[in-house]
Amino acid sequence: MANKEYTYAIGRRKETTAVVKLFGNGVGNFTIKTSNGSKKMLADYFGGNLYLLEAALLPLNTLGADYIKKFDAEIVVSGWGISGQADAIKLGFARALIEWNPELRVTLKPYGLLKRDPRIKERKKPGLKKARKGPTWSKR
Image 1 (cartoon, helix red, strand yellow):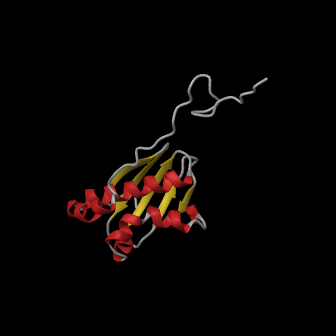
Image 2: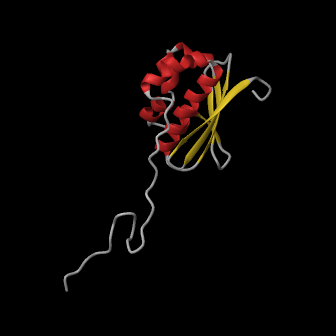
Image 3: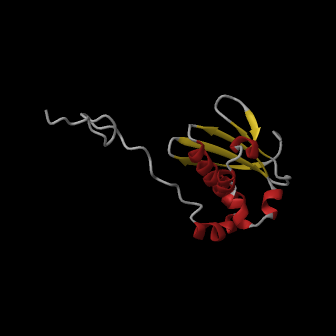
């Protein structure tokens, strides 16, 4: 797959970053490489969490079932949290599809697939144990 032409895009969510390389003329092989260097198929990576697999492949499913068979993808994920990784992969797929064919933007935009979720972890404040949790208050 290294010498084929591809389009790539970056998707982010929380602390996770996913780089999606989308190869045209594929058969539906989606491989994922984690920060520790292990390579797996996307379905094996998410294991029994089918809702996360469906969330990651949502841009392709939105366009139609035949789009999954059109492409191969190599995905590099860094950052923790399997839910954040699925959302980062989803945004990466959507952006790579737009790069591949700009006319698909009209189809993907109403579903909110091109918008990055801006929610991140709130910072810890001084005098508190966490962002909002204070120390236990004792009357006496």
